[in-house]
Image (cartoon, rainbow, N blue to C red; front, side, top):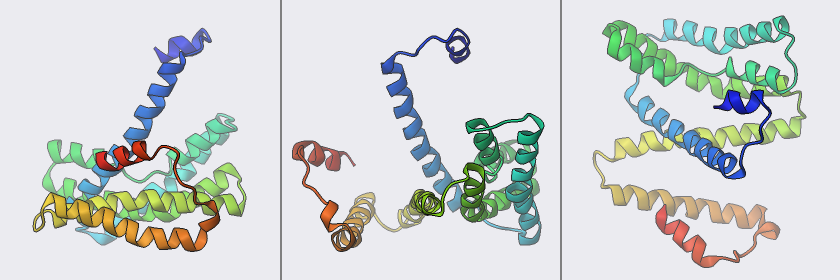
Amino acid sequence: VSLFFVYFKIPSPMFVVNATYLISYSTIFLVLMSLGVALSKLKIFSFKESLIFSCVRVIIGPLVGFGFVKAFNLAGVEAGVMFIQTSMPSAVLTYLIAEMYSSKKIATMIASTVVLSTFMSFITIPLVVFFALNISVKTMKAIFYNLLAWAILPFMDTIAKYLSSDLSFFQITWARYFFTVFFTLPFMFFFFRKNLTWTTQPKLQIFRGLTL
């Protein structure tokens, strides 16, 4: 369907565009949540071999992507997407497939690679983004902090999974939001006091808080 619209240059209806954006944003959260749950089950069994495979994934991968960019004369967004996508860590999906169709030894090796390459990507991906998009240092810091904030979600889900074996769901949820407010509010009042404003739709915000 997408190829049909692109080939004949037919503008997409606005409701389709908005729905697609909303679905894509929810997909990001679901992927991060599944990553956190998966990381809580995975362990590093062979550090040396996992380190070699992880380095191949997060270091050789961008070099391969750079080769494709040069070979096909890509530029702009296309080059940036190719470069960044080849810099991603090993996907959890590879472990799930290996667990179903491969031996336990291979599955554990892939699990170790997924864990280690994910941690290494917290350092390599911001560097790749910096060189791929040719951005300023200030923008680079903003991207790095944004990636760091998103990276917290898998770890929060992992911690919640471990706590769920001893604590109830309501206790974990209460503690999560209570301490978020407890540590965030003083920080906001200290650094961003001039930018704080009261909402014009308090009922909507209260309903949003209850649905969380």
